[in-house]
Image (cartoon, rainbow, N blue to C red; front, side):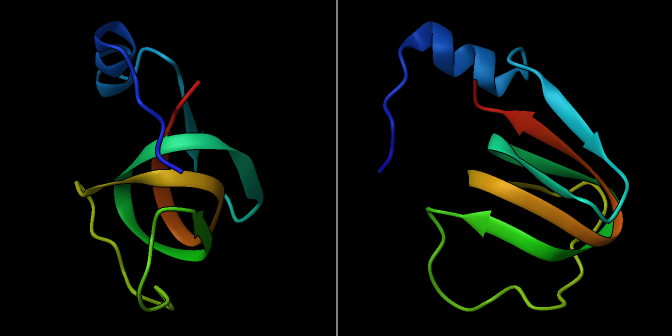
Length: 88
């Protein structure tokens, strides 16, 4: 289910004002995240996104500088560094 945000909430999300989590390890990180920016080339072990359909990301490499959007509830890296932006 996609949640509607009012203008203030949407601006806060877009600007990262709700908070973020820097991830540079292989532990599982859970929460409600709406965007992930790749700091250094990253491979995910687990990337749970309730809005994503299609093929598994497998061992795809996400390049530094890329930002992906979704409704992420679990992030686990095999390698790399990311910033996960909190939804609330």
